[in-house]
Image 1 (cartoon, helix red, strand yellow):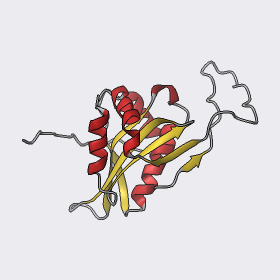
Image 2 (cartoon, helix red, strand yellow):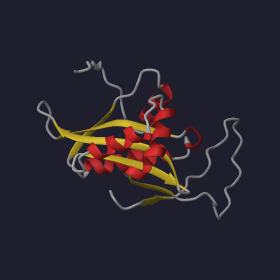
Image 3 (tube, one colour):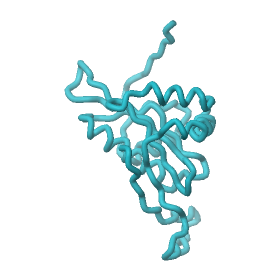
Length: 173
């Protein structure tokens, strides 16, 4: 996914007080959302998104991490609107021994707070799913911290289901 994919802006969400939203102007002035592959020039913006996600990373760390990715099995996509990177998703594909097909794993996913609830996350997720399917993935998983309940509701609304598995982690070295 090296070419940008414009995503039309979504209409504003209905207010929570039950009233109807004002009709959107016919010439929506909001810039088009573009989903594209991340590159080293995005390191500062990605560093800021990592900080919003409670994983502070320096731009240099992000640059080095991007350089280590293997294009045939790793992809970082960014959402850009009006020249600003407002979200990212990282997805990886790997064959597994215990299941048929290839598994895709989303290992990072954040949309800046001010751009949430506007279709950015959904556009990133769909782009990651399409990229993974294009590499033979037959299923995709997201690991999300227990405290991220708002994100869990979003994933469920997108058709993801919780599992009965527990994740274990151990640092090496």
